[in-house]
Image 1 (cartoon, rainbow, N blue to C red):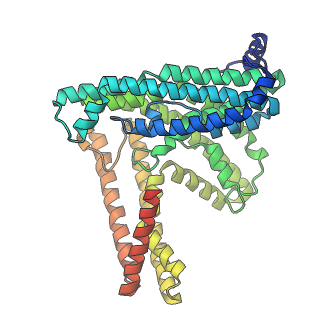
Image 2: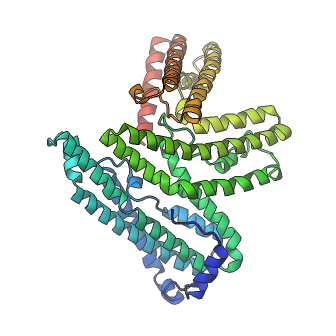
Image 3: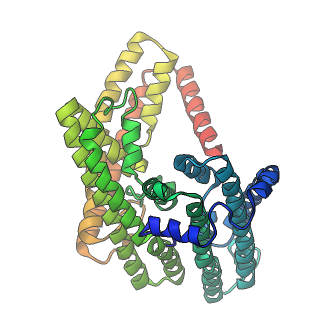
Length: 453
């Protein structure tokens, strides 16, 4: 995984003893003179990295740049780390040079990985999948696996580059900055290894994989939030333990998670059902450790909220966690968008009143069905070690109990679809023909705009 400083104080003292202290191979005066060039270089490297990420993402079986260079520390995240550590102007100059070298090395690594992928047959795979050429099925599978292995070949180098960058940061600090560095590293690990998992939050296989309770709590405590006014001291101990435990979980699972995703992709390509099942179970074990830690932490915060702010605040907080874990399930539905349109357009007081009545009944039933779906999904994951989705191929399920849960989830999905359709029809019936046409056009245009963004 790379970053795992068991004794940061020792690391800092060792770096200083090695002569790295605030020099990193260049003088401060040279760093000052190179500042403008470093800024320009960082901009050019950032542009190059974005371009290479886009080019790489088009490669065979690569969903995004993260499949090729993972993890990488974005410039903005590095700047936040430096700000938190409170480095001075001179230290900032060297930090800029450190990051510039790190970014340049990543670009060079991406180029090497791209070359390896090309050598493995990436272009033939792209041409075959797009229908430009014919490649025999067995050969195509072999080529796709070879390309994935090429992408994976740079992981050790990526870890080494990140470790080198962090050791450079350590060398900038004084020994009394140890505690703050440890806290900053825990925050960075969550950003590096936890938060990117939320990129798949609209997929039905997502179940809170990237939820960070610290961020969730921050959003809930703003003015107007359900936990606004809660005493920070009442949850300080909870968060202290949570930070340490999730950091350990990420340190233990980061590399395995990266390997597992590629192994699962290869197993799907090779249609190796036993390997797919094995990797799925391993992925669920990693997910379970973080999910149950999050769930326990959220429950403890909820108890504190009930005591200080009341049970309604507790329920709202628990709902926030559930919605964060299953955003694809709780996303805005067509009736929600229709009701919003009617409210904003202020069609008439009578129509608005009837729309509110329709929507209130719909929302209650929809929430109950969503909670039921969550229960089915969690039973499959926690009890049967099976990822369930209403869109999955049921032939993948080997156990009768898993088939029963799948059928239960499928029925739930059908009920939600019918409820959406019925509520939508009732809301449309409140409008004139011209209003219905305008509402449909506005909702479609809004959805198109979101897709383009």
